[in-house]
Image (cartoon, rainbow, N blue to C red; front, top):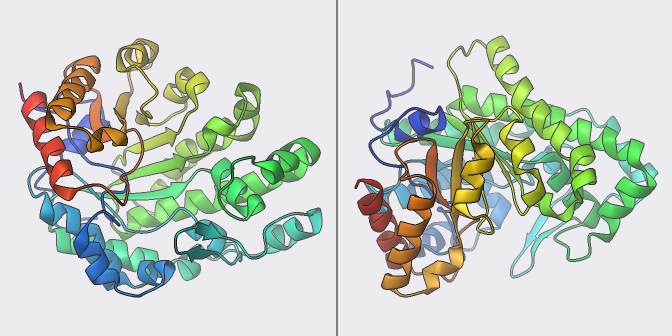
Length: 363
């Protein structure tokens, strides 16, 4: 890793490891994307996944918010998508304008599943473009801020692979885990194995911190979360450091888990082996801090992104309440939204939010 530029700002790495910091580090999920006018200029008329696979363009989009909010954002996150793992597993995924991801041939029968289970995944080959984009971005950042790598959580990817896209009823995903639980576990294990290798190789390529997005975690009951999500999230937290050791990387790489709306699982997530647990906006920070007390991991979040549609006075008040609720932010805390930005948000309002986080967090 010595061939990469040395970090000039390691605030988020220190906070993730539980060290005391001068102020809470700030970054935003989906900080690189559709709310920024410069994103549309660079993406032009390209297909979404075509954009991701072009290392030069993906790198530029990743750096755009760092450049726009220079000194206010403490991390970059590589421009990509959680659905690149199903693509690497041999499934076709399209991004439909105005509708989101679409799988033309979702997994609906045991026979469909067998095709995916039998598919030999060569992560380095199938996702070579992702690693190139990470390396290029790490070099371009020149240590200005650390670079995030990420992947989707196994349950969340199972949902997309069986539903064929986003869902409101989760009919097919629920059918799989209730009608074919053993086959579901086989699929979840396959996804987990690919995720471990993908995350590890992202670190080799230059990622300095990792996040796992279990975006549909809240669609499971508590019992089903314990069976179909948590064991695989734990595997990732346990196996990635071991794989990194095999790949010759000795330094500690912080890992974050974000299981959206999984309110019943916070205590378990805090004890699941991750350095950081990210919270959505439904959590009262004080309550989360209490639950985390025996675990002592770092917490991340959790402002409702919708606050960005409010007045400056409202943003200031909500930022103050959030940072105070997490204990002032000088230890075990990373500022973030409770989910990602929206395409309709005003970049100048986000700048004001970040400025307020710095002001309040530095007090």
